[in-house]
Image (cartoon, rainbow, N blue to C red):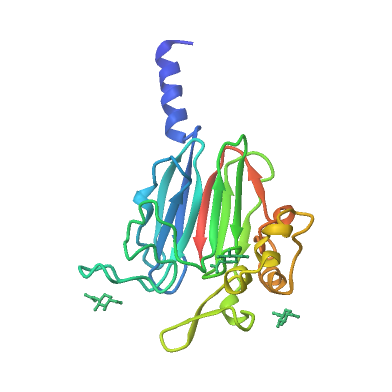
Length: 237
Ligand SMILES: *[C@@H]1O[C@H](CO)[C@@H](O)[C@H](O)[C@H]1NC(C)=O
Ligand SMILES: *[C@@H]1O[C@H](CO)[C@@H](O)[C@H](O)[C@H]1NC(C)=O
Ligand SMILES: *[C@@H]1O[C@H](CO)[C@@H](O)[C@H](O)[C@H]1NC(C)=O
């Protein structure tokens, strides 16, 4: 093959993102959201960790090979000069760009570990629920299932787990681990294994609402998904 053709081919491969994944973030919520992105330790943040998405808007972000981290949606943010302003849910210290800071809980998470050697992805309610989140892989090889969590858990949140703001409105549903800090809910201590940490009456409520999402830390068998070489649409609401 002529060198010219080879270089065109290489250009096309890099352009098509053979060794990177494109995350397309889509806001299908009624109002604005501010996705937060936290990259796992030691790697550069994507979009400096935060962005704004108007209703109906989509933004594509390229994640480098081997990227690993989580995304969540923030609601009710106002970022202005006071530096005091925060988001109603998912806040990361009052800043648009989370820059390595995690979000306030509860938060529905979209989690990714790319190229390990496959891509692993999931929607997690282990840190509670704040809004519907779904992941749709495209163009990959393997099982590559869509993961949806569309249920409005704020309206079915177990008593005692509700996060209320703005005069009592339920804006999130906390995990039993956070509220009760018990080893059986947190899968810690004697419950620190898939065998000993079993679903609880609380995690079962989350599982019923979003069967494909993690409802507790060792919920792997029904909640971890794999694909290879895909791009991912991450849809909020
Ligand atoms: C920032 O928050 C603190 C404590 O919540 C409050 O006392 C202060 O007035 C706030 N400052 C501004 C500029 O809003
Ligand atoms: C779970 O069980 C505990 C103890 O039996 C009970 O106090 C609590 O109300 C139950 N919660 C739900 C959501 O069923
Ligand atoms: C949770 O409980 C453990 C002991 O089981 C304790 O060490 C820890 O400080 C508690 N965490 C919170 C946030 O209360």
